[in-house]
Image (cartoon, rainbow over all chains, first blue to last red; front, side, top):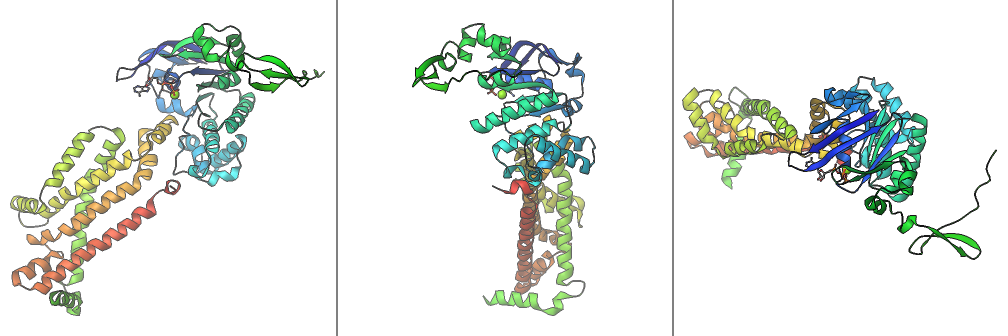
Length: 276
Length: 221
Ligand SMILES: Nc1ncnc2c1ncn2[C@@H]1O[C@H](COP(=O)(O)OP(=O)(O)OP(=O)(O)O)[C@@H](O)[C@H]1O
Ligand SMILES: [Mg+2]
C-alpha cells in the first residue's frame, strides 16, 4: 500500500509543483494519475522512490515513511518505467533487463536467464536479448523497460507515461499486454498519463489532477463518467460532448453509433449471447 | 632543402642509433618524461574532472582554473621551477603536469556531461549508487572524450618535453639544444623532426584507441 499524506513539493527555483496532495493506493490495485502537462504527476510519482523528496508531508509504503529508507535499497525494490525508456545504450537488452538483479549480486548466468524469460513475458523474442537498445523500435524499447522494471519482482510498479512515445496501434497493444500482465502478477501499480482513455482503460481507480497536484476528482472510471465532479472534469473527460456523447442513427437498416459532431464511430451489434 | 636532406642524413646515420647518447635512448627518455608528466597530471585531473562532471559542482571554478593554467607559458614555468628546485627532473615534470592538467580536466568533466541526463536519471532510479552511476554509466559512455583529453595532453606534453633538456636532462631536446650550441643545424633539425614524428605517431595511436573504445551500442548514429 502506498499512501501520500498531505505531500507538497516546491522546487528550489520556487516552482510549486504540488501543493497538498493525499491519496491511498491499495496493495495490488492499479491507480492512474491523469492530468494536463505540468500538473505534478511525475513529481508525485517520483516521491514514491525518493527520486524527489517532498518539501512537506510524507509518503508511506506499508505504513513506513520512505524518508527513513535508504534510497538505493528502496529504488531496487520498486519497478520504474519511464517515458523515454531510459535504457543504458552501451549494455545489451538482456543486460539492461538484468540491471537490478546484477546489482543485487545475482550471478550473471541466473540473471541472464531470468532476463530472457522476462523478455518473452512482455512479448519479445528472447533473441532480441543480445541486441543493443538502439537496434530496437520505440515500442520494443518500452517493452524492455517494462521487463527491466519487473526483473527484481517488485511489489510496486511506477509507470510514467510509458506508452506516450509510440504510435496508437502499438500503444493499444502495449496497454492490452499490461492488463494481461497485471491480471497475472497483481502488482501495486501507480500509472501516470495525460490520456484519459488510457486512464479509464488501465485504472481501477483514476485520479484527475489540476495544476498544482490538486485533485479534481478521484473514483472508478464509471463513477467519473457518470458523475463528473465539476466543469473541469467534465471538459477533461469529454463527457457531455465530443466523442463520449454518442447517439444511434439508422443507416441502411443498421444501427450506427455517431458522435456529437456527426462522425460515425462504430456499428452497434446485438449483445453476445450470454454463456452459461 | 639541402638542410632538410642533411637532417635526414643525420637521423639515418647508423652510429646515432646506438650508444648511451643515441637516438633510441633519447627517444625512451623523451617518452618516459611524457608518460611521467601526463600520468601525474591524470592522477590529479581525472578524479577532479569526473567529480565535477558527475556532481555538476564547482564547474565554473574548474573552467576558470584550467583556463588560467592554459595561459601559463611553459618555458617560463620550467625556468621558474628550475630556479626553485634546481637542475634535475622535478622542475620540468612539474611544468608538464601544469601543461597537461587543463586538457585532462576538460576531457574528464565533458565525458560525464556528454551522457544523456535521462540515462543517468534512469540508472539512479533503478537503484544504482552514485559510484555505480559514475563507473558503470558515465565513464564507459564518456570514454571517447576521456581518451580525447588524454590525447591532447600527450601531444602537448610530447612537443614540450624538449624543454627538459634545457635544464640538463635527457630526451630528444638534447639534440636540439646541442645542435643550437654547436651551430650543428642538421642535428638540431634532425632532433626537431624526431619530436614532430613522435607527436604525430602518438596522436594517431590515441585516435585509434579513441575510436576503438567507443561503446558498442552507442556507436550507431
Ligand atoms: N526539477 C525541477 N525544477 C523546477 N521545476 C520543476 C522540476 N521538475 C518539474 N518542475 C515543475 O513542476 C511542475 C510539475 O512538473 P511535473 O513534471 O511533475 O508535471 P507532469 O504532470 O508530470 O507533466 P507532464 O505531463 O508534462 O510530464 C511543472 O511546472 C514543472 O515545470
Ligand atoms: Mg511527467
